[in-house]
Image (cartoon, rainbow, N blue to C red; front, top):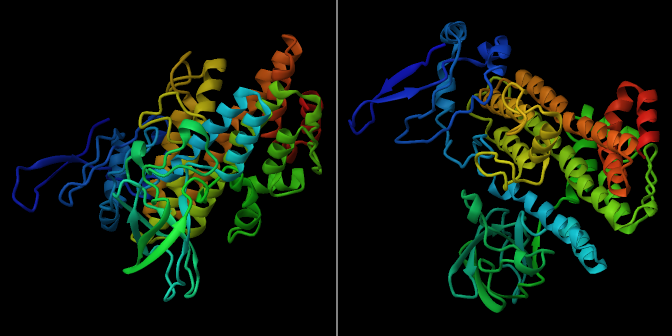
Length: 492
């Protein structure tokens, strides 16, 4: 193995810099995927400086380097000069701003905090956070004192003031017609995860509420595309959220069942098994209410559980059913938009791909992926501790799971394939990702089947087993319906 070094000079004539670049085309990557796959966590960090790419060393075999030099296309390097300086997401380097998307795990955390209180009031709070959010895609619903003077396009700049008189930036949430008085303004977000937005209200409670960056309460003025209007609104009740965990399930009918690339295999496993597109939302709400589901297969009666069991059903359902499928949806969206052979027109697919990674990891994993999150990345690390499959080789008893090392490699590979317009290879990468993402659900089902059968597990363990089984039964059923029935009957 050896590093490939490229020497370039800045336009200003500064000292020569040594840069490591990946001199391989997407064809070489595809042909030698096994080589790349076994070099775990080859994740390059990126930073733009005076139009010069700065990509940290990626070890490649001599054969891969030779193949790359023979087939690389010059246009690829121009595409790689796009902005790559965003904060990492659990070691993944996104090519777009996705801090607001990553923050969906803060809703998951807020739901879990309220569930753990085990009071009726707290559970009402948890359900409202699940339904209405608080941390992602924050917007203000304001009422203008006079109608809009002209049509205003989605994304039009909006500025106002907060309660302290400091400027607050935003943009039009939707295209809004002339004459409208009710207007949605989405708050601007930053590239820094810790301070990505400063208006977090929605259905949040207590210390989770942050109104420091919200538009000022009461009657004030706001600038919409250069036009000044007087508005009124109540900050505590009219700051809402356009991205919610419930929406990750209720939107699947439109986005996957009727999507441009339909049918989508993984979604169809679940839709056909449960008989509905919003199976995850129905599961979670039935658990909140202590009721029953009415699926075609895989029904559950949550009246047999108290709060201890239903807590597990809900928090695992939201993360491992709602978020799981929507993560897959974002990868499918990226592939639907991918333009084959085009190296300068795939920014939108890369952004969708970045969103998928964000929904897998969340924001609380940090840039290094240290175990501290609430979504699928954290689950993989937890199950790794149980099955002792940590580290790049899957032989460590602690640390990051081999599964997450493998997935981060696949995420980075898919990002590159989309950038270079290699859509067929990106689809194969997505298929490998989906296969890997089922693993923690299988591990969880095995773990809690053992706890219930061999260790006389109680309500908590039975509920956890049922939740993990529900997150994987449709896939098992598609392969072997008898096996799925046996698992269901033992873990229902």
